[in-house]
Image (cartoon, rainbow, N blue to C red; front, side, top):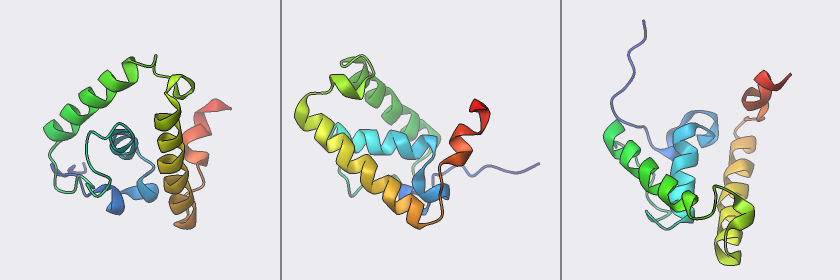
Length: 104
């Protein structure tokens, strides 16, 4: 039995270069300017992450949860933040294959 930590390590120290569920929440929070891009959420507890998720979901709901429905400035910000994160994660050895393993 593994014991899960009760505090988040921060997106900059997360596994898979931050390509995790919590990492996506944080990047989307940056896109919607809910937290500054300097905020890694290091040492946040689960309740704090969950509260951020609720805010992120409320923002996505305004756009039908589709990047294609974001206004141009938000779409550009989304692409910039997520493209940079993917490049960084790939440089750290992440391939993205794990996320699509169940699609075969």
